[in-house]
Image (cartoon, rainbow, N blue to C red; front, side):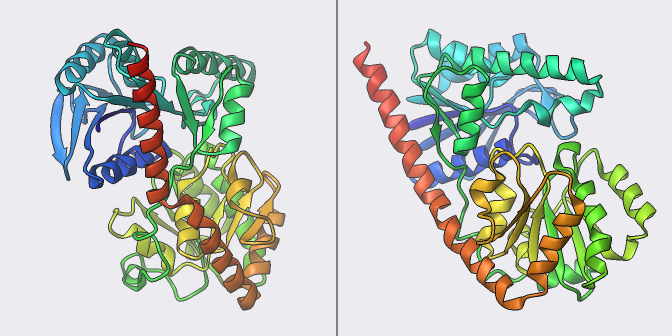
Length: 393
């Protein structure tokens, strides 16, 4: 098949949609499909780049000041280039990942050229609106508007997927009156596995020889990392641990101020961006993975941790309970409750047998999210969409 993916965010941007699209593109390419991806260019010029048999068409873009790491394409210029790419590639199927400039532009021209198109949603307004620092009532109005714009685009697609059942139900609650297929973002179980060795990273990041609590992801407001930090003193009363915060984001300075205020300098390590080749190894010298984010439609980082045989302590919010089975491969805690968070972490770290059992349960549960299975399911959806489009001619 000749497959065109269209996304408004792509690797090396650090978010779920970017990582998913990157992984899907390369997995499809490895199965000998011709894969093309329309993405924001990293410059003010349109670009064409070949990356391991995947052809990336970059739409000229500008940095988005309010959302670090994201870039913004001007609608009229983007549409012209998207049209040009679609005419050149002549894809059998188009798969959009968002409803913004590039996703919306791809839908428009797919309809004009009668090309079958499907969509996956990774969107939650909570990941965007907090950067604007609006009064609460205006923030709620903006969320409603963003959901309305999403429904306007995705209601025109014949097939829609979401990473989890929770994500699918959320879309329907906000007005998408059609079936949504829950289909995991998937995880590369060959790349992320307990056999990796991250010992060398201890020296690189100057990490003491203590039990490791690990967080991987963006350092942004909706991730609520301050809940983890405020729980750390409770943990330190019982166990001498080191917290690693791996990632970048607009909230780092704020988090560093909390660390300073709580006197936690020697117990918290900010690694910054961890290169792709090192990330699988980072998980393997950790003892436990933690997540307090309240806007997770799946959480790729949590899946990576599970594939590395780590127990997980996560907030009981949105889709995280679909990955973290309370009392089996980890524990859930109430949103914002640093003390209960700390109690759950202590419970695992203080019991070596429980830690090992929960890690093995994580490894067992994650098998259902094997990227090889996910890609085969997308292949079936592509074939179904193509077959349906052919029958309408």
